[in-house]
Length: 219
Figure (cartoon, one colour):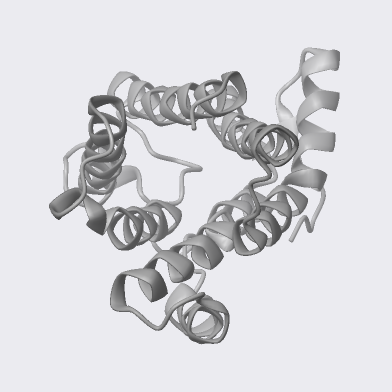
């Protein structure tokens, strides 16, 4: 059910994507942006939103799902293939091996924790676990750079705010509807926890009016 926290979370998530699109198209540079994180999010959306093909919820729901899939795919295209933006993409720095460290564990967790052993349910559960750790390639890249451009830090900050708002959405739904979703809750808490160090330095940089500078390790 829609409520103000979910709506705000959706809008912040959408804003973060368009903020990143604005950065890439304006600066013609993707320095500091992880294409591998975007690839993970595309996998998340494509495995979670299979219901687009057989279950209609609402126009809002359908439009948002299509927008998330298409905009994320476009971001990957810009960074990987579109000149001159792709010439600024540092493949050697954006090298977190999610194929080895994230996909297999999330798939195992999906089989172990899915409520029903159905294809779509397993993929939905997989998407929840994968989203909880999808920020890791971006944080790993920022760790190597240490000094982060304002628009890039705002993008990552917005992604963290989106997830925090979704946690408030779950709390609200629990008290108003009795809604329980343990897998989503645990995944959301893991995802939010991964942002904690980043947010500390992000807020600190905003208060000081300076560029975000990270210590040697944040993940």
